[in-house]
Image (cartoon, rainbow, N blue to C red; front, side):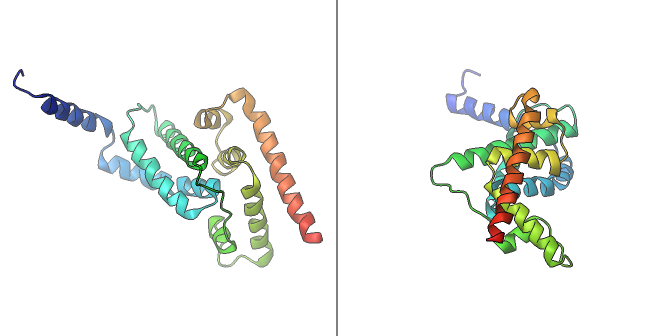
Length: 193
């Protein structure tokens, strides 16, 4: 061992780290990806209001997930951890000085909300109103509403994912719903003018 140089030793450590980092085999990851990619992308697209941004954040989320050394108790724990990474990445991206909130266009709104080709005008209009109102909310409010009502997570799961206290979640969700209602009501009043 005395003949090893520092760079050789660093390479050995790096190889050991790389082997430890990927705790899932390819088949297990592929299955996990197929189960989580669509809901995660949908969450990111609604959270950021930008489809391209959601694509980038999705890729980065899975990369960081794979590089993580966290131990998981179950697939559900693994899924919550993945959403926590995504939420933190979206938050970090939003904090960058050159990033500005982007509202989605009407065409993107329909696709984002999953409007079907057979949906009639009133249904599409309601979905567009909801998308615009969600875009007016603070990012944390959007994340709370999306995790609670789209993903169907419990208060404990949401708190863990967003780094909040479970005890404060009920009040935070109430405020987020109130803000959404005010945004929707404000849009409807604006139409009446």
